Image 1 (cartoon, one colour):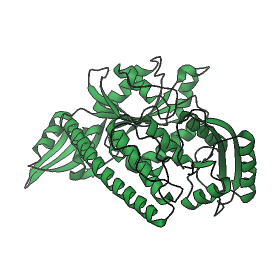
Image 2 (cartoon, rainbow, N blue to C red):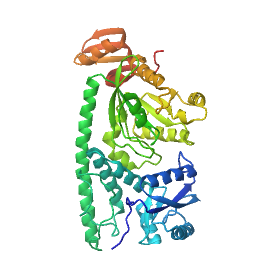
Image 3 (cartoon, rainbow, N blue to C red):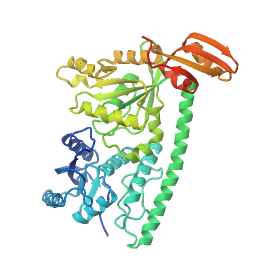
Image 4 (cartoon, rainbow, N blue to C red):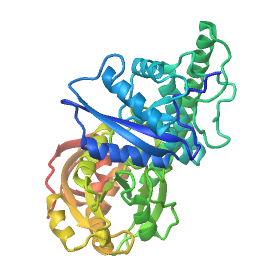
Length: 446
């Protein structure tokens, strides 16, 4: 019976050896050194002990083993010397790379990639049924193209809603023939189909909830940022909530929404969302669609940045790129430079904030700068007006009322079939009127 799996287990004492590659012309926001440091943190978060690492610069990946054959032999020697159990690559390996590397390292050493590691961490941290379903779908979609005889039958596959999913490998072989492989593939496809249907129900439920919030005219603010930037700490501080906080990557997966009263007594909802990371697996982005729509449907984003991190600017750029993928980069955003209490000169953060548009320096832990931040949020949501010109059908009486109650009407003309209104609206209402725009400028009312 093979002990090999492409997923990490949760044995705290397992030893991991890390492998990183700097590929010419490949776009990465973090340097190879910083990315390896992050991979080490990911391994520690998964309960592994890092015992060594190796790196290589390549013009392009080796078609068989990703790294060069000589580097493979070097890593095998180092793995034997350090008595490592697992080799983790800081990239997503193709199914072919995975198979060839497993052959090179043998049955006693497991080969993982960055994606498998992140999926395992998500599996460990998913607490709600929604989170469990999303992680399980991502795991199965990752696993399907990598299914070989080394993969095992699904009879003891965890998941389905009773508790945390855990890792998706590690059950006994049922037969070496292709027939069993086809059975496993079919079962995985069936599970993927079932999970997608369940998650579509979740998505529909979330969408109905968002529509209720919009009808209540309470604006929503989503906290986004690189993992471990301090989003949950900020939410706890401003809402007096008790969201789980830990100094580790991906401590929070499931979104948490809290009501917050702003300085001039306006009310809004703040939502804490899953942290981003460089090379966030595409399977996770797809599986967490329902959750991530909380970001794309927000009225305002707070982009939390750990200003003390040596790669703060690169992390900021990585998050901006992910927001673009989610088609949320058009939403008004305030950059929040967090953890200034850890700087030797907190006043230096004010100078750093000049490098970012619409930025404020704070300490979510001590409360420094929070009044200024909340005032910026209130101004953006309630006082910052955008010029618009809309043609509203008479049957859209609710939108006409919102314009009268919340906006400033400069010109209004009643025509056949509808009302032509020109004026200004708070930014948070713009999405409600997009379908009826006659003209829109992006200049804000000062």
